View 1: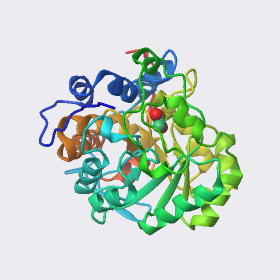
View 2: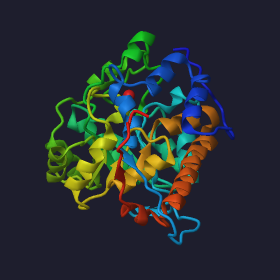
View 3: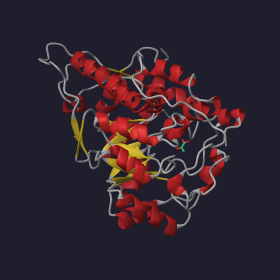
Amino acid sequence: MDFKTSNAEGPVDFINVDDLEKMAQKVVPKGAFGYIASGAGDTFTLHENFRSFNHKLIVPHTLMDVEEPETKTTFAGEELTAPMIMAPVAAHKLANEQGEVASAKGVADFGSIYTVSSYSSVDLPEVTQALNGAPEWFQFYFSKDNGINRHIMDRVKEQGIKAIVLTADAMVGGNRETDARNGFTFPVTLPIVQEYLPDSVGKTMDYVYKSAKQKLSTKDVEFIAEYSGLPVYVKGPQSKEDVDRALSAGAAGIWVSNHGGRQLDGGPAAFDSLQEVAKAVDHRVPVIFDSGIRRGQHIFKAIASGADVVALGRPAIYGLALGGSVGVKQVFEKLQAELKLVMQLAGTQTVEDIKHFELRDNPYDPAF
Ligand code: PYR
């Protein structure tokens, strides 16, 4: 398949992530950009992901004796430059010819955890090499065949990967109408899942998803934990019931997400689910949050609502499209700088202080 995308590498001049998205649209082919940026159905849930942060307000705290707030935090045994990690995103070669090699380097240079997608367009050893010792996690799209799942986990362990993320909210693809309109099919191979998906080139996302297992259950969490011996984070719970189910199966952490509004349109904004999930988890395991982060204040609000760290998906991919590894690092740095500013104005010196900060309910029209 003849597919040409950006091959940028170097500094990007941008003011904020929303601007970056518009800039990325100009350098990534239409079908690939649509796949990355869009959501499911009417994109109600996608848009609520952004708007929902306005349901809570950060009241400034004054005379708090704060200077140079510290964004460094320890998470899952790792020292992170800021409470942000890389979310799993499929096929980075859609955004930049360098693919995951560049995004991994960018995240490593910033100082955080990189989650490799099962649908990575670069194979595991090359990603590990690009990370150069930075912590690597693996997101699992499960095969219907446990023999294949064992092989994948063997390879994951060979790389020294430290945790497995089971995506539980995407056993089929959401109703991606933008992809249908654009006639989008995958122009790249997905080497990690070659054994169950040898022919991704020219295939729709729906086909890709259907090659993986639909009938996921708590038994799959138990199987991964037992076979790999690694901590398993379940990605997708948005309710107490789902938290209970995941933890009863031995989940080592809960990753609150609605898959960036790409799956069940008509569902809640992930930020609105975070409070219920955090209450149900009650500090028993770490909580990761994604879906809708575009601003430092969003990170602050997520942490004040019970997340230990947030994960970045699309913003990092836009940085990748425009500036390769440097662009990815710049996106993390931009959000870190915004977070630091919010921390100062909110009177919080450390990430731990944010966890104890009480947000106020928004009495105004949250439609702003
Ligand atoms: C997505 O398209 O959302 C995937 O997770 C592959």
